[in-house]
Length: 82
Image 1: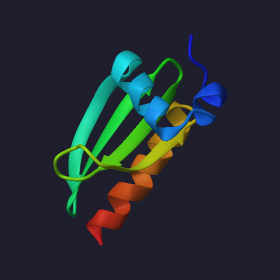
Image 2 (image 1 turned 90 degrees about the vertical axis):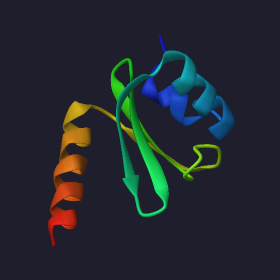
Image 3 (image 1 turned 90 degrees about the horizontal axis):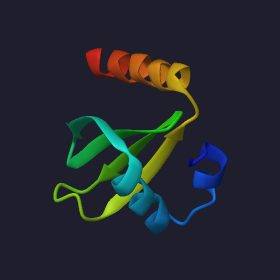
Image 4 (image 1 turned 180 degrees about the vertical axis):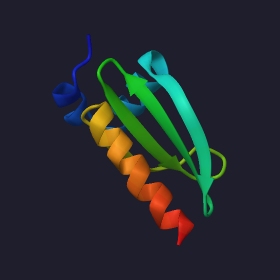
């Protein structure tokens, strides 16, 4: 079982391998010229921002739990409404 603390210390390449092997895709969206994908791994969520082709990963963001992820979604959706 992969835990969030262990995941944080992996290199970005190993984090991506882990997400590809064990992550469950929750959703995709386009933001400006980037693809944003959210995955669930055991008891935490990971958001990956990549280029349009999905090859070059620009950012990997880790959410500790569902509540943190839901709060992020609320703030993000409010900022798009303005």
